[in-house]
Amino acid sequence: MRSIAARLWLPASVLFLAAAMLAGVLVGPVHLGAVNVVRATFAHVFGLHSPLSGADDAILWELRLPRVILAALVGGTLAAAGAAYQGVFRNPLADPYLLGAAAGAGLGATVVVAYAPASSLTGDLLPFGAFVGAAVAVVAAYVLGRSAGVAAGPAALVLAGVTIASFLTALQTFVQQQHVDTVQEVYSWLLGRLATSGWRDVGIVLPYAVVAWAVIIAHRRLLDVLSVGDEEAAALGVNVARVRLLVVAAATIATAAAVAVSGLIGFVGIIVPHTIRLLVGGSYRLLLPLSVIVGAGFLVFADVIARTIMSPAELPIGVVTAFFGAPFFAVVLRTSRRAA
Amino acid sequence: MKALTLERVSVTLGGARVLSGLSAEVEGGEWVAVIGPNGAGKTTALRAVAGLVPYEGRVRVLEDDAHALARKHLARRVALVPQVPLIPGDITVRAYVLLGRTPHLGYFGTERRKDHHAVDAALAQLDLVAFAGRRLDTLSGGERQRATLARALAQDAPVLLLDEPTAALDMGRQQQVLEIVDELRTSRGLTVVSTMHDLTLAGQYADRLLLVDGGRLVAAGPPDDVLTRALITEHYGAEVEVVDAPGSGFVVVPVRRTS
Image (tube, rainbow over all chains, first blue to last red; front, side, top):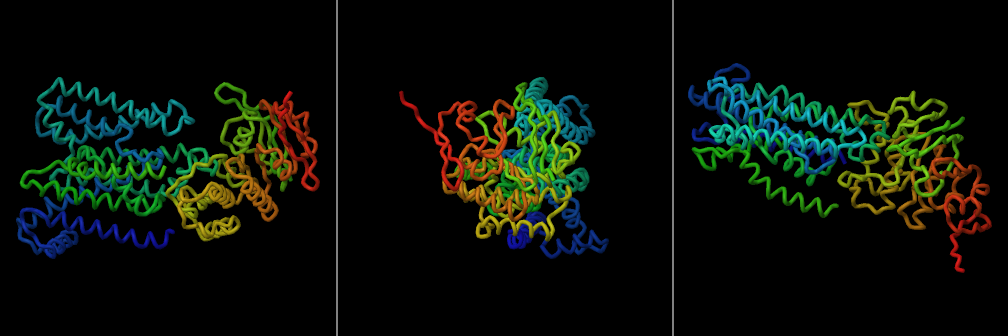
């Protein structure tokens, strides 16, 4: 089973990602040319002379390329985290925000926008506030869920996540009501956007994303074992609670980092893994690596649409993913109902 | 060598005493059936042996204290087939059977050739080779049962615990599954402990029966000693006749007394 599927799907997904990234650096108001773009990128990486003019080179290296890479990192992280959450909770509708990461990040960002002194510092504090908010929310949900006892299983964790999320959302709404002038800024952040702030955001996400991908993909076989249920997995000698904790921790930290720089981008964590499931089957051995690669390519494409469709204005990328995500989600729902 | 030894094993679940002071021994290579009415504690006894519920007392597996064995090492000795296995529909039979190799792999390890050989052997022995690439949710109940058995077989554990292996199967499939289990027991030298509702089948396939009621062991021994009208009426509250069927032991027949 592994042989043919793996041999075909992995290179196909890498091709998809490469095409997405090439489109990402080529599409824009200034024409750069595919060959020049590739050569200039190699020139930067290996310290050679770029074939592009100074201004074009800056557009490529300071604007488009970091943004494409950021999109890839965020997309790959959200898709992998979604697939991982769906595995450890055996819940097809789980997404990276399941345990309150979104609500926590929203509150963190709102608090920063509302209370931080208006200065250039606010821009730096916002990702930090979102990251801390997301991480605190998930830890709180985890502690609350586990207090129901290990026997309560994944359902208790999910319920705890819902509880924490609604509580934090209430707090966020309250803070927003007290500072109505912040609504605009918070709202645009909530919808998700990929900033064009050069390599700084890439640097923020990269270490978390790479570590999380590695941890999640390393658990691919154990996530297959969890698919037979906590009890049978335990009878096969697996420490289910430890697997769940490690995978959730990796997925959550990376999600928090992604949310911190890009806001809330919905549906990637659900659409991408489910599309792959429908095409390749449910084994996590292939699903997890494919989720990273396809998720990265998907968000790069979505970002191209977001910044071209109403150019020069930019559509929030969360709107693009949800616009394609919602109809798709309906299809997934119908399919999973038929299978049940 | 004793395959299993239970010494005064007690289990309390949600404040209720589900198993109290169960003591029993199972010889290597033996087939022991645990029988008893609903809620007697049969399944709990199997789960305790597999280390899935906390218990008082002592369980020895191949003469070693089960508490002293790491979870993974226990899983190398004891394979459990639950009554209603959770079947992940969207993976293939082969991928599912491969999960049986889990206790033989390191935390981040992947299967080697030896593991794939074990899976091939299990698939062949359960006649599943033609199904290897099929998704589990396309299989019938009997085929799924065989897939779960194959997974347990791939686990390569000397002790096989079967919780109601024939529960959802028709009469012919029931016999098929039990024949397969008996054949595996002989060819692989397995020790089998199964819970069974069908007393006739239990008597026909098991070497010894353990009758459990209210969490206590109330009778043990060869089928002829345990399958008596008096014991069954007392513990199942059922009206039965035990009929001698020449060549295949006793047959337990429910009867309806109309007065």
